[in-house]
Length: 514
Image (cartoon, rainbow, N blue to C red):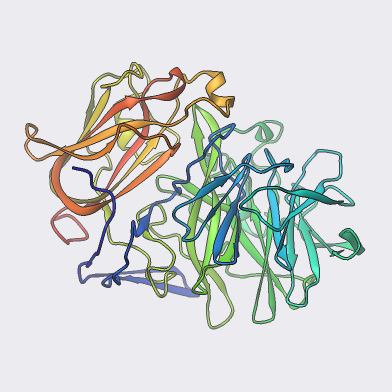
């Protein structure tokens, strides 16, 4: 029996009220989900996107563009994806597009996509490419830009004028300049300084050693307490006002978060928002909500797609997450990250997702008793239930049949599961190859009495690379024990699990145990 997609969900009649910010009261209320013909209806951060033939298990600095009823997702990858629903993604390996290793910048002008990368420390001017058919993936060079643009972000205003924002530095802040699309995107006028970091006044911009998620190459020459990295600009326009977003601190910190400066002009002057940071998530299973893109879905709702802090094989790696956002009546842009790594509804399911996107499915597996078929010294089974993406349990081998079992303590209603894999002892060839299989294959059984087992998920033939694989069950399953069994681990590595996360309700529809 295979259970994958939910057909219809009627949630319990319960409410959870939480104040995020004194200026932005948010609440969650549960309502019946409208009948939809397909599924799943929920996702869980970090997003499950098939990495395809990637050089490394990393997604970061995402950009989403909605064009002609399809969403296009660009990231630090050797390709990009498109989807009609922000759920089912098709990978495109483009031609003539050097996009590996640098943040992308993408805009659409008159049905033509324009793409460049945000160079940093490259000492050469980036090229600009275009295509009228991004699904086909054939791009051509149209111009060479005038200067390096670290963390480049192009913006097209309502009047068709084009601006470039950039910044990736501890000292230079965020800059902007107008570009001329009719003259090879040359700069019009001189660049302006929009703003700089100010960690002595704005405490969330401070680099603190205790907030380090992992040690990155760039953190080694600097003490964490030194000036923050001010980087990753993104521009939105709403009701005539310009919202220039930026990320502070550094991608290796769990406090990696987004702030905003506003202006009545695309080139400023810009005013610091007193509601900063507007996007932050500094705890939970996975943290970090920075270097982001804020976009509208097909129904006009805003979403914030972000870079999250993670690691693989003991090295810093990033993944992407998706959070609902909105402008309130006073024009304040806010983002809801509460329960941000618990199951949420996909865009299009809820009418007001920034206030009403949490499923009420709670985490059942945290710090529960677990056992394993074997354990590699130093990588105990407790790591698989500790809600920490930087740690993991590792079996003694990657052989088929290695397993782990979680005892939930009592029979619970299980609605969804998230499988977060690592890559312990995977070969260097595996880590860098674009051709070798990178997928994890497995099965999941549940049982109530430790004897009668039921297969609920069969991914023994899985061929997609989902480091954070999430499955929403088509029907709730009542069980006390959950068993995850290895079928295939790629790269000659050992079977390793960051966390097996189980979501649902301890007793029927009760939100909290007891």
